[in-house]
Amino acid sequence: MSPTRAAAYGDRLIGPRQNDLSQWGYFVRAKRRWLGFLTDASARDGQPTSDAAVTFIEITKGRRPGLYRDGC
Image 1 (cartoon, rainbow, N blue to C red):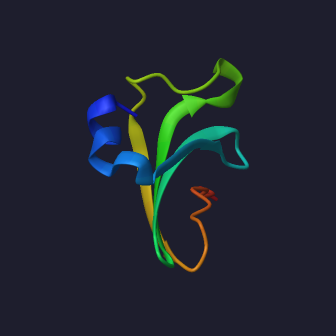
Image 2: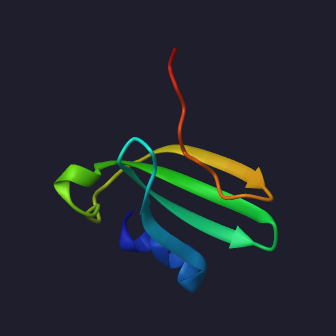
Image 3: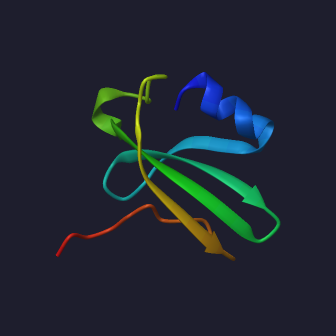
């Protein structure tokens, strides 16, 4: 996630964290609400660089987004 995008959330930005498919995501939590950003970076390549693109956004209430979608 670019420094500009990360700066928008300040120290409320959590991540990067891996999902079950070994992709990197970032999260923002506000009380029981969550906002998750999945990047196009793969865990096998190391942590995402600043040019990693956000490919999916998920909003949840109560628990952190899984950032996992099966195309089947």
